[in-house]
Image (cartoon, rainbow, N blue to C red; front, side):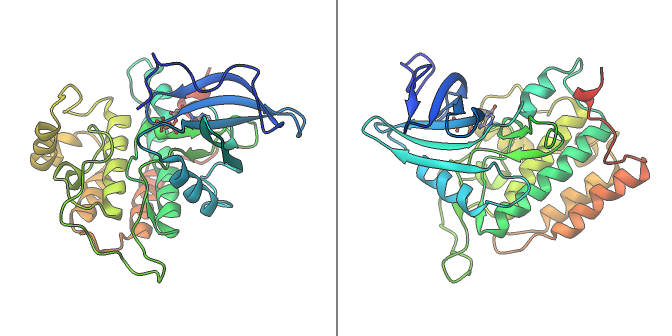
Length: 300
Ligand code: ADP
């Protein structure tokens, strides 16, 4: 696994395939590194390049490319510009987005978003999750740093889903559900993982939605009860035993209904996305939130 202390894969001013000129590193440390670059063949348009060392023990970029290509044309997917490999690295070039939601939350004074921003963002994330499920894949690492706002005037109010490194196909070629494995290694991020993941069980569509539910709760409340607990099993137990009334104190009733629906779902069940969207729309309507009102970070 690459760490930030290791040498970086790309250097500033390096040009990839005579076309993309590296400007700066903007993220990474997990499985890959993310760079901002300019497209020399397209008016120096800014793009993002994700790279992975050819020597990386876990090669995930191929999966990312496969998923991103299938998501093309969907509202919450980055544009795919190209990919390739050489002796040193594998790369994926895509549209450059703005700040991720973890950074945006961190920049707020109370580490939380207003109910209006939280619900409207969650609504877009729900659409994004629905899009990836519609192509037969689970994301399996839904968390705030894997969503970014657009960066141009035309898309800065749209949420983009990032990082398909842990994605898994849940439908086979015939469009049928793959049989669940009896044991699966833990995937994802402890704070946002569904109980299924903590139990090392095969994840289903509802588990991406559980992660969204934890994200939304954190956006509104500013933290989750297990935020300081490092032990994965302990966090799993806390999630399993959590009292929804305490977790969702002062949150709209619709969030309870959201969780109750998720609780009713197992691996083979198709979540009722329309119902979940209706719940979020209901909160928006009841509170008079409109699509054109500014997000918290757009004020002042
Ligand atoms: P990793 O798999 O190494 O965690 P990610 O794909 O999650 O890498 O990206 C890490 C961070 O880099 C994201 O949280 C985001 O801030 C930034 N990032 C990734 N892709 C883009 C992109 N297309 N545009 C802008 N920023 C991006």
